Image 1 (cartoon, rainbow, N blue to C red):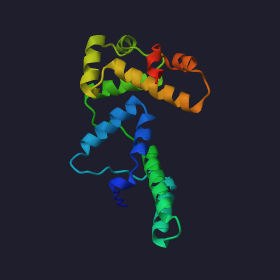
Image 2 (cartoon, rainbow, N blue to C red):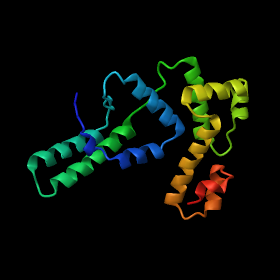
Image 3 (cartoon, helix red, strand yellow):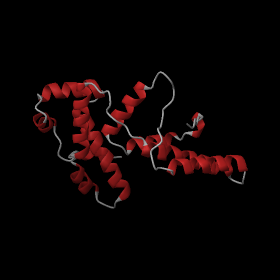
Image 4 (cartoon, helix red, strand yellow):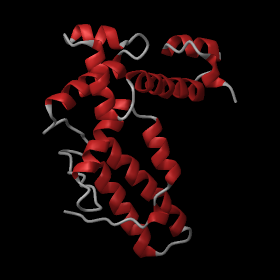
Length: 188
């Protein structure tokens, strides 16, 4: 077991925001469940993934920079901490273990939103899982703190942001490809 403690100044808020903004609503829901379960302590456990030496190598390089005191070590250590956090989050497997029946259906809905964000609707998902749409909408809001529509729009905006930053597509094409009809989301 390796215990790594981070001082607040070592963790880039921009990095954490970037990690969160590039994930899905499902990821956010599951990570919030994990943090609530671990609130008794102010730590998060990252179990070692089998056959994954990526994190180990990053930690070794970080320790090496710390002890060798070479020029620009502080800058390199800061960069390695950012890389380490990103690698830990990338390799962190969040599961729906110990979820209530209500949470399990919400996880299914969030997966539907993530996988079919362009065309998903509460009515179609309710029909697929044989639930009343109003009941499902109420349960969704109770468990996530968001309406179905807010979660769907958020998922669409996550994908739109990725397309805006990684392609040269016109905004109107991006809107259509992610299922957004209201152009006000793209106004400065």
